[in-house]
Structure formats: C-alpha cells, structure tokens
Image (cartoon, rainbow, N blue to C red):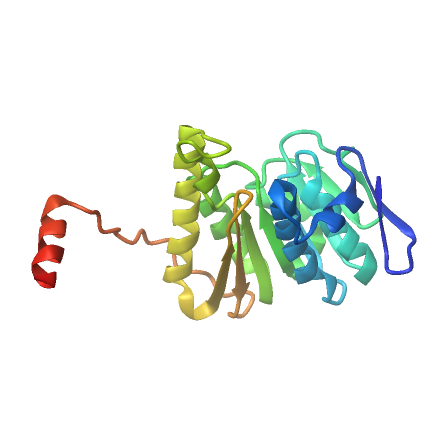
Length: 242
C-alpha cells in the first residue's frame, strides 16, 4: 500500500490504509472524499516547499502521516511525528522519524529531533482532543513555526456529531466545539500575525498561516464572549423590525 511519485515510483508504504485511495478520492463524493480533500490540503501546503520540516502531533493509523510523508519524499523534507502510543509501524518512509512521547514534552522532543529548533514549516495538531491541550500546544510550538509557515488543526467541526448526524455523539460534539473555540480565540488574539481558513466536512480542518517572525511569542488565548439568544434579545430584535 504505497504512494507513487510523479515518475510512478513507489514511495511511502502504509500499513492501515491504501494511500493511493486517498489521492483517488480527493474532491470526490461521500465521507472518504471529504477526508481525502482535507488530507490533500495538507499535502499541497508542504508539496511545493523546499525541504520543509513538518511536526505531526498524533499518528493513530497514520493517514495524515502517510500523506505528509509522500509530499516530503518528493521535495526532500523531514517529518517528525509524535504519539503517546507506539505507532512506529504506521508507515515506512526514509523521511519519517517517530517519537513515542507526549507532544507537550518539548525539551525531550527537541533533544531527539534538533532539526525542529531551526524552524517548523507546518505543524499538524491531531492528538488529545481537549481544548486545554490544543491551547498548550499552541503556546509551546507557535514560536518555532517559521514566518510563512502553517499551523493545522484537525477536528474543528462539531457538525458530524450533532444530534441525528452521522457521528451523533454528545461528548465529542462538546469537545470539538471547544477545540474550534480555542482556534478562533487564538486567531483573534493574534489576527495581525495570522491568516485563517477553515474547511468543513469530515471532522473539519483549520489552517493558519503565520505572518510574524519565527521567534515572536503569541498573545495568549483570550476567550471572546459569545452572545446568546434570549427572550430579551428576541424582543429587542422584533422591536427594531417593527
């Protein structure tokens, strides 16, 4: 189960899925089409960079790992992937380094993968699905993302988990909504230094482009109050329309 480069040569080997099926499904219908389209957004971000360094937080079956490694084998980049579980057999690729560790253990990670100290071209966050964890990863890794680099976040769309939807799950709906809120609040706290785009479908993908110099520390996440619909707000709205 391997991808092929532009010359048709076999590259990345994947254990748990067929990499070619992701390329074939890109832009197509159904859930696989949405998953593939989001993965290919990541592929395109790194495909045309010169020897980029990518940090992946969360591996599991290695779907994003395989797609990212495919792009990086083409352009001579490096992929460092982190997971608390042993995912060392997810893919086989010369460009890949796997570290079994908590992705907040930055000091250990930088010792094992010092290439990250020179700057990260893309970080993909898809590990512990908790808002506080995502906020912590932003605090730790944002200063090491290069100017013009990308911060990517999986699972920012609670839509599939809403009541009656295909993944109907109250706990995940709440968790995904909280992750989305952290991403949005971080963006608005630092909007002069970021561009943001969000892709819905599957479970959502957010992509931030960093415009600030690499070493600039971000402003902390500031929760923005959300207005709620109340009987009073409805009455005010109707009064204005009268």
